[in-house]
Length: 146
Image (cartoon, rainbow, N blue to C red):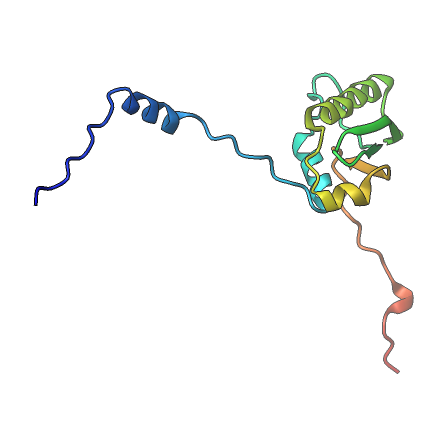
């Protein structure tokens, strides 16, 4: 019995196969499943203004999202460092809004999207260095030996 003849490999299949293998693979963005994931994602997108244009300040924005991770309404700045100048405030407000534009819509899981839809998030962005903690003297707690 003669061995079955294999079909010849079509000449046009090799370039198509090569093209398919070299195409970039699009990975689906990591789905956010917890509130911590949301805060971490927004902080990864955060780019404070350069020191040449503004002094470091702390700023907090309150923002709400729908189920699909799209911003609802208008984000509000609720806190800025009290020593900030008007220029610092403007530069940091712009940086916060650019962060929200760059990162949204957020890829919520179905569960997180349903849980957070319409609820406000207060997202702090800290850029100031906190002063070192001073050691508190607690004389009134020192043990006495009688």
